[in-house]
Image 1 (tube, one colour):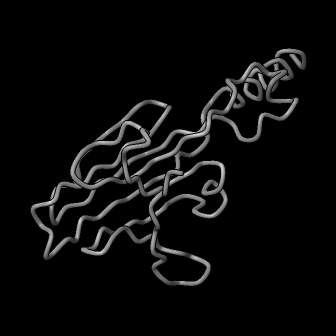
Image 2 (cartoon, one colour):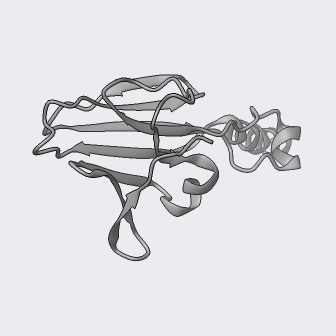
Length: 149
C-alpha cells in the first residue's frame, strides 16, 4: 500500500514537469487617432508562428506558452521539452517576416520579459508608435524600432 502511494506521488511529480507553466499574456490595444487607416500587426515567432492584425479601437490578447523554465538539469532528466525563446513584434502596414527591410518594434521577448512582465505585458499603439507598460516605474515606456545596420 505504501509503495502505491509513493509511486502515485512520484508519477504526479514527473507529470507536473511535463506540463507547461502559466503562459505569458501580451495585450495590445490599437488606439491610433490620426493614423486610423494604418494597419497594425503583431507577429510572434517561433512557437508557434502567429501573426494577427489589431483593428482600430480594438485589443488583441495573445497567450505565449512557456515550457518549464530554465532548462535545468532536473527538467532535462525528467524529459521536458527544451524551452524555446519567443519574440513578438509589432509592425505598421503589414505582418512581419523578420526581414531586414522591415521596421519592427519588439513588444515581447521571452529572454527578458519572462521576468519583467511576469504574467502580462501591456502594449498600446498610438500615432507616434508603440508603448509598453512598465510595472516597476508605473509609466508607459516608448518601444523604439529595431534599426538594421
